[in-house]
Image (cartoon, rainbow, N blue to C red):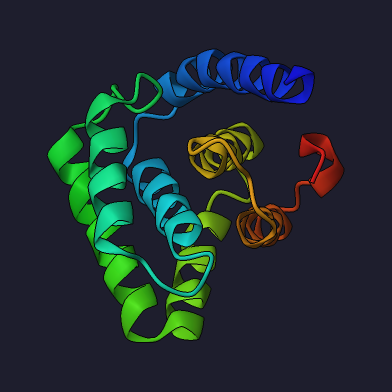
Length: 151
């Protein structure tokens, strides 16, 4: 129970910090990269179920961290990357990682996208190895050491 309380507390801290960070990056590249990250996390096990899509839509609509963006536009970006991952997982993953990689020269924005991925990964109470791997790959794409996020 203590471990879960620690994780929950850490996620709440990340959420507050992430909202502050996201508000600084109200641009299309950041919106696309954050939704590419969300799609990567949703597809981390190789598929995106209808339930995962529904939960992601709910997260996009209700996330304080992403409230600076139009939810409908974010949903469109998520669906774009999710459909790429579903039709050809490896190609979709490359495209999603490339989109996140566009933030390489904007380290603050890149860190905020990584934080979004961690929040999504831990939203169901577990941050499984597939989700961690997806976040690590995104970290590598933007040259952020995975140790910065205990990955």
